[in-house]
Image (cartoon, rainbow over all chains, first blue to last red; front, side, top):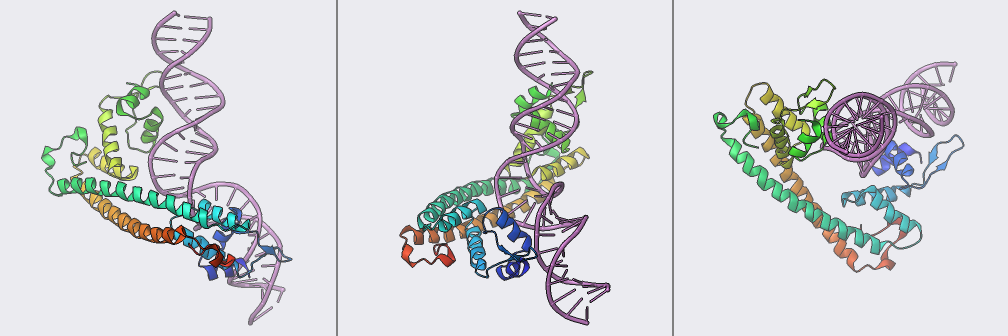
Length: 129
Length: 129
DNA sequence: ATGGACCTTCCAGTACGGGGGAAGGTCAAG
DNA sequence: CTTGACCTTCCCCCGTACTGGAAGGTCCAT
């Protein structure tokens, strides 16, 4: 199947498929005599996997690591577990950072909710921030 | 004062100050006869304001909006409140997205904690993701 | 007068995951 | 035979907030 067909089947764009190939996430497809890429329809499952990885917040580089292990004939379970572990800790750090930020921003917004502009001086630009 | 001095006083770099000027966050400084920027030491409070805005998660573009209002002679309280309001909703959305993501990733990692590689088929790359 | 620390401008690159659009080739239908 | 939809490669662009470095000018102390 051609690039556009596979893209539609896998819920992405032809442009993105060429990008994935360039990045080593997809193997170089067969070519027709005229130079068109000719994909095995099975490639769609690989793209699905990429999408699942992205949904888990993995970067394309991390997804490629898993794919490379699998392509090397090994089973990537251990590496997947490690990546998920690291990703989980990272997400938790992001959450706690955002919760602190939310509290700070909420306090600022509450202070700014009933502004007293006359108490502001131009020097500090805005005393509510 | 010169760029480097102001940068040190305000806890940033000379390079960043030039960048801020280029982006319209700092007014173009006076120049000495030889072309060096010659800042009013008061500029440091403006940089402090930029830092406070960043600490609240505002983008430089948003901070510039506030600065522009203040520079136009108006009092930016209302706009600041609106920006903080939008920012707060955005942070809350990010937090809830991340919490969902954390739950998903945690479930995946738990499933991958005791892998059964033999139940994997190469087609789906990794059944734990 | 010379060295080093500072300043200037301009161009380029970082990470991330693509998107836009040009210039040209190909395929199938009418 | 032409039209329109698709494909190819190519290179540049998006946003975000800077950072690095080259080439050259300046300031101050020795």
